[in-house]
Length: 106
Image (cartoon, rainbow, N blue to C red):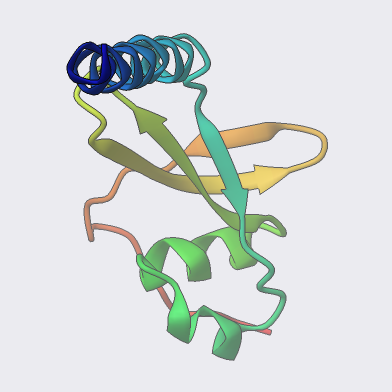
């Protein structure tokens, strides 16, 4: 009887953990949502820390805030879209080409 207990208890524990490990991964796949990060920058020197400084400066020039829309794809690799955010217009993606001026005129 003791030998049977040493066999059954590990099987029950293994079954318990293998069953409940599948549920969170399924929930995680269903609950994936995009993340909008609006970063507080109100002066040009505050854009020094931005991932895309020239986009941050362009947003400030237009009276908006620098923001990132982070999209989580099916392979758990985030994709970042950089742009500007305002309460009125929401998130507006900005072309990441450097064909526009980054000069900030006060």
